[in-house]
Image (tube, rainbow, N blue to C red):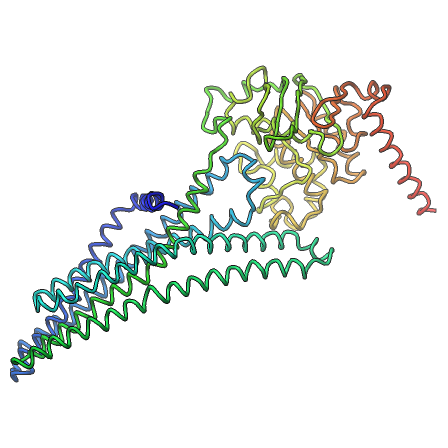
Length: 599
């Protein structure tokens, strides 16, 4: 990455501190006050040695004044240091909160295609690990660097006042340290980048392994997965070893070497002075003390270079995610002058729509159909025929490249996203359950959905039965992804969630695939009632569930190859009749097997 880009990312990161500039200013004032106070301590010691110890002047009042002043200096410095650190900690936590909130918010604006190619572990690493590393910039690197610079300037001024010639000798060594810092920044930056990238790979491996633990154990893949994780972990160890090498060569050892050289110059200078005349012991002590104080902040600054580099690299990775282009096909910020309930009646129309996910292969090609308000239309076809792609376009998950999609004779793009999706209820084949109570999973935080509406929705889809058997009923707290529920129970819960929203358009993406035959029959009558006055679009896996559909669209390889009513399609030779006959044979065989087992 170019130096100008790194500088831009660093400045952008510092801008997050602007809302807290008052706290930062107060912190810097305390830092300057405490640092300046400690710089006066060697002068007091020099005065004690040269003014009292050497000449034997034991005037009590003067000694008490020196002692009280010396103690007061360190009390003030200690208090200032504590308060300044507390302020910087609060600023750092606030900045990390703001960055993490912004990057998390940006995720919801990204197109679904982005999540198709980005591993979950890498995204989690950027939101958690990288943002946490940024905190160290405000807690450690920034205050330590400012404190070090202030101390260094103050020490150089004090040394110049004591002995200008020796101070200039010491200053001549500083370019060596700054040159080492430049080399460190140049060589460590790509290593830090690689380190954060490999750490993301480790998080990805862990995330995939935990989510797929059942499959890994069932298929006996523990050894292979463990070996793959070991390879990634080994790569991370090698990258970290390179960092240790660079740190060992260009940071602390370099400062210690120049410090020893400077001390030799100072001792040599005072030795030469002793050969020609008297030497003030207090002055020698003060000069050596200041010399140590000069290299102490330099050591801290160089050691903080690792934190600087980590923070800048992490900021680059976070801002890279935040700079990902949002889905511009739809206006995420549109509010609309009227509510969606007034403008959305439920009519759906596709006009010669074309869709390609990768820009090469067509997922949908020349799709045209109309669903009148209140109609029940079913989509059928083999896997990969394009059924889910139609739902993806209607839910605005992906942008289409050709044709037009209209709702109530208005372009889909003209509707504000949030109110539009409140009026389009989608029931997934694989339902998602949020952490929280069952009631919260149904009303989803919408204040306009009452407790009575929640219970009524659950009753319509026959979900009340299993809910009321739970210890806390509708207030039962569900764990991650609702693991305590069966697949059928989670699907019924998603039914209740969708129906509680009272949508104008109901979309079922093979929603009965995970429900047993008994449950399916129980909810068919309820769904028939709920479809009245509501446009329903269903992807059907079991063709027996769509026999009463107003229109059936049969898809193959992204095109509509048949359309019509159930009985009408059965009379024709074609894909629909073949699929129906194949499913009927399977059902017949299953029934015969059950009779044999029962006998």
